[in-house]
Image (cartoon, rainbow, N blue to C red; front, side, top):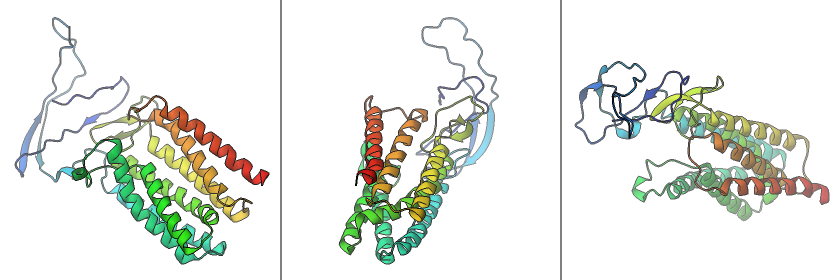
Length: 298
């Protein structure tokens, strides 16, 4: 029995993916039959719902992690992440050379940070969702965990190489945001970080790997935010050097954090705390204000 909740009139076409595990491998003859449920406390004949016809299909078993349902492309996310990292490294290498930094060391720091960031992104997700270590391979990833691990590792490598940390951060900012702008559409195609169901004409049909329905495209909206910040930081790097190195990166990251918090209410995932989002918004605005005024006061 599969129940899809939160569906409103005008949502358009809908798909529900049922995943059945621990069955014999091979080809199965499947029959999907709609069931009319009697609401709790309701007596008599239930009101007729949407007219759904039974469906009969032949399907073959697959490796469980690859079963994603209609509209989901499981390999889109890793491919776009790799493309984003490649773009970030290229942009950073060009900006590092232009700024007179050790290009090899600067790029090596980013690559080392990306590798460590992948594992910290998974660890962050597992802690957040209370998953066990044996679920590591199938667990999701979290951008906050990636940023913490990636930049923490990269800064250690940069400091060891004798590269000015603030200058490296400003040089790394455009590539980091352009990478996020490239990778985020992979979340849309892969069925993660989905938006809430909507009947708005601006909604796009997508799936959370179980229910496919018209949703708020929060992943694409975040990609546009990252793209705008990537373009802004790149233009700043090419035309102006802040008197306080590192403020470009800090201000852009604070703006990204602020914008991301505004998008969170549009996501289908329920919030975990009542105070986390308001406190993060205030903190991001204070950091942004401090970063913008630091060059003026210096």
